[in-house]
Image (cartoon, rainbow, N blue to C red; front, side, top):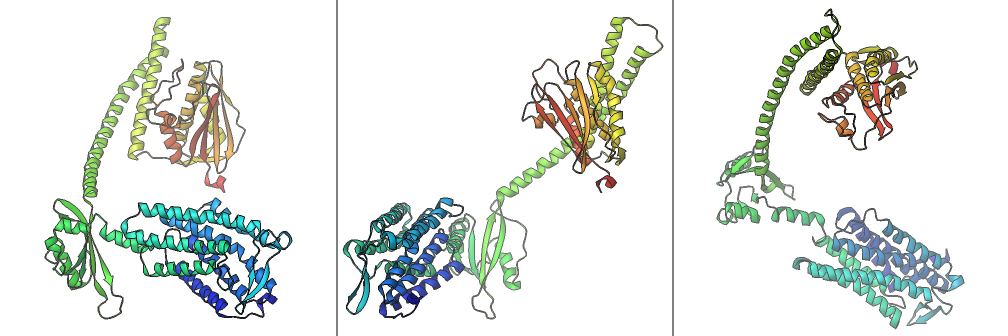
Length: 598
């Protein structure tokens, strides 16, 4: 603690302390008020500068050699961090880059000062930073330390010079690419960067000192304070100010500034081009302007703006936006005027009109399609029912014996009549689903009994293709909350598909298991399988997967699409897992009744 006592504050340490106070105030102001590219790196630069000035102040005010050397060594983490942070600030500002989520940069910010700190702590043993010839000297009434620079001093200095030289290169590149308006500011940044570098080279090479001390921190501190003053009084680095200027002058929408009497104060280039320069002269009344004049007169009289409709000007549509310009001085006149901007919404209005027309046509076409499907489906169902009934009578009725060839033909006709009736039913269901007219009759249903009944119903269908249905589900003793008819349609559709794609002599295995708040019914086949990425085709409308196999499924491609919609509307889900050549397992998740969920 002796290095914090017995301090003498002469001109040099007082100057360093004053610079520290100013830098601290600047840091607080920048953190709270300014926004500009590279701000995090700039704030880190000021923080490193504060630490350096802190150690410099106590170094200059200390009296003994040990304390002076100790404070000089303590400054090194800040010495190494400052040029790195400054260089990254230059890069972020000139290239307009964000410093977020950059692990390599954070590694440099933390790693390099940490390594240098370890070197500092071991310097008394290694003397790699300051050599053994380091000693206290007196000159012109003040004491200072002559430092015998070791090899690591020059190594660290060379490492830091790389960053500073890189920053100078970036500034030169930015200067060549920049607009004329910002080049003076970039020149200031160049001077601020090169001045401390020059001072440090003078100290290292020629022994240039300030009261026997390295002049680099003083030069950097003055430069940063000067730059911060520019930040406070210049909009070049103020993102908000630059944005406001850009919004008014560079926008393609006409924008006008008027005073409280409706006289023109300013207008952007778009407004002057659209209305003409003669109508937007300084001091000219805007209340006579077409379409806008009456609105402005009401605004001046009432002080409020409630016009929300689009206005039409010269075959274009605009949304009028009027914002008050508040007075910075609180007096009777709360406003200095208004900004009047015309947001061009012509394309939006035209697109909206086109969409409205297209929607009307689409609704009419959809209505016509629905009516057509309903009519055709009902018209088809009646004769198909008669055809199916006639075929049933021909095959199984009291007509006596029929020849085998004729029986085969009648059997084929009967099978196709069933397919046609299934297609008609699917089209009718699809139409009801599209129109939202399908009604679900939800009720509690015993899961075990339901699955047994469905399997028994489809056993004859499976037997026709020499496929065996196997019920491996154990008694789950669960009640489902579903529409029995629609759930049977869903499960039956999956079983039917599994049978179609199973090889002769194969089997389809049905099972049940709990899956969260649902009962999962699994239906597994050992068929040809479904290629990956075909979910849209499996559950799509009028879609079927092209298997390139000899066994074709037939059907309309609507069954699985309807099944998916129905099970989801009952609060369940349907999915599958498949491997080509090995088979497919469909999972139907069915919601349980309220009592079972509890």
